[in-house]
Image (cartoon, rainbow, N blue to C red; front, side, top):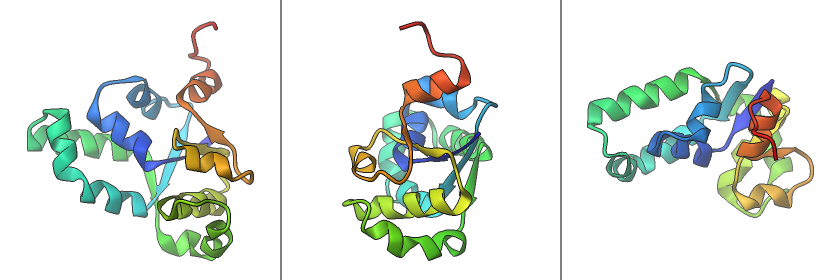
Length: 140
């Protein structure tokens, strides 16, 4: 199942061992994210390194492992969808995610950012949705 990942889910997986990290390594999913995600992570790298309490080398290894599971979608593949997506969401940082999701025809976006709920064109999945889809959710 092809799912587009919001930058904040990737950051959550970097910052601590968690359900989010477990989901990222779940073989039931094929993950993708726009190349813009790399810019966002690079802008916050110093802050993220401090939060993780990992050495620079450990941080880079974890980042590499995470991105082995996530396909980076270049802007050239989603730029035709950018104008359409500008009117769907109020946060300009999220436009590329919507556009990339449409471009690759993903099932939806895995995000906890409330801005994604503003639009009704694409499904938005939370961690619990992802666990349910993988069959790993605990009984309610």
